[in-house]
Length: 126
Image 1 (tube, helix red, strand yellow):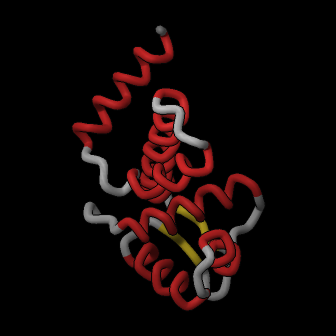
Image 2 (image 1 turned 60 degrees about the horizontal axis):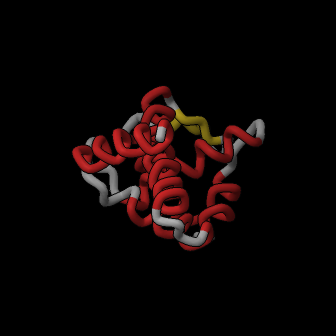
């Protein structure tokens, strides 16, 4: 699935973050993290299962597939880099940077992201 919607990116990122901190991730955990209804999360999880990014037995724990992990790491990397750029370079307040990075991570092009990665590498060595 090359056309991940911003909300699907948020869902897959949430499952990935939650799975690093607890042995099993449940639908309720994702709903709580994102502040959404279980019904909304259930529909998104169905889409992620159908596209091969997530595995889940009926009413069981959620597990990202290898493709799901790769996608989640990609989204998380964009978020983290954007948040660092906003706080370290632009000196944006941390709370605002967290919110803005979440919005920006879905819209930034690959070309711009590559330039930002290069910029931040130079910024770190400066």
